[in-house]
Length: 309
Length: 264
Image 1: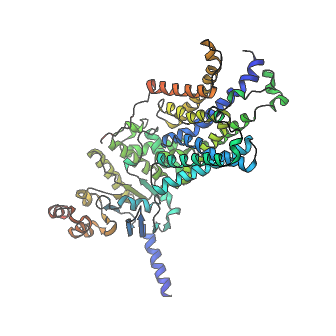
Image 2: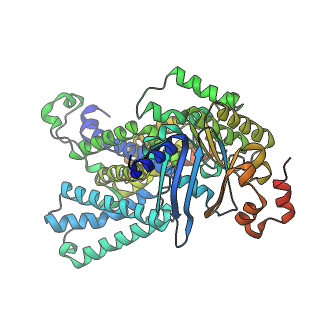
């Protein structure tokens, strides 16, 4: 494929897919090790009331108010989940289950009881995103990457996920030691002066920001898959946290690239007419990578099984 | 000099001499308190065992003292300073079962965690830090295991790695939660010899201990808890048939108590 075709039609969806996958996989590493991996699922449910509330307040269906609404709902959910977990002294999965189903139900009620049901709030869009439509019409070829006028026409989703990735990466970099130690041994971290509760809430809020930024472009299926599959596959490749995070970034980028290509061209190779959902295919590829890592990864045995229990 | 000043001076003096001073510590997880109004005064340079039956609040007491759980009430002073200002003076060894040993770190990484407070968020890890971590591992006989993943260790080896991490903290007060639980005899000997070294260096050791038969051999002071504090003092004075009876109720037979407290 030549640059004149690739750059306007495939470059930006591919980049957005890769960046979204990496943005979600990065905090996913810590959520996985903290047994909170389902938080991505929880966030994808709780943003519904936020989006509806944003519509009720602003009266328009545009990206920015929706994102703020979604982010606000995610933060409310995170605080509620932590509150239920710590006050009720129950495991995180149960706290998430209580909060995200309740908030999702509230979102449905809100949608039903207001005029929003007349507006087209697209369910398909929320699930699969619209990765294929994020094309760069102003581009004419590779030269457009240096053309300021053409660059101004880049889809805004690209800028949003890029900013989100930088923000998430900065958080993980600055708080690396605190995150590592409080994930491994929370009590010890507390004695060293780490504010473990605050850090736990901050991590989930960062994950929520990543999810919401990726949502609009790639949909909830991909967000949920990227929080879990690349970090889980990476864990099976190494016994060091630093390497696990690096592997998860490689797997996320690989899933997004392969998934995008397979979705666009795979069906044609098999004689079918239409392409399939890129987000769905990326999630499927990440699942396949996890499957391969589970079968052939060098560190797939539970080495930490109780020795003397 | 007014009477009030006299009291203040005496209080300060006591705080400065003791490594750890706890007043009125009360912790509750639900309806009834797990620890009720416990005072403790641990002299600097001593080795204190905290003993009591299962569920008596020993671990909870330690966690509240270190600020890991929030108590209902109670004040903690460490070398005369409030807890928040004394964190670099405290090393903590949690119960081995409290962490996930599948976590993707190597032995050396765990020991280096003891240096995180010194290093700060982004301070560079230097060769000297690594050498210090290896040195701490060799003090517990684990220097050959630095590159191993922690899940590949036996229970006793895991416990020694935790102790090495505490050694890396280079603190004056060492607080250990059941350091001898489920470890092999070689590990138990290694740990007790390190703890005695620490005391010889003038440091203070406080450990939750569950094996009554070794209290007198390992420790010089004892604190007996069953929700409330039953006794505290030198082993010779506080570890008696009466205090054991009061702490354990009917759970120990009279013959057992006699064996434990008969002078060797």
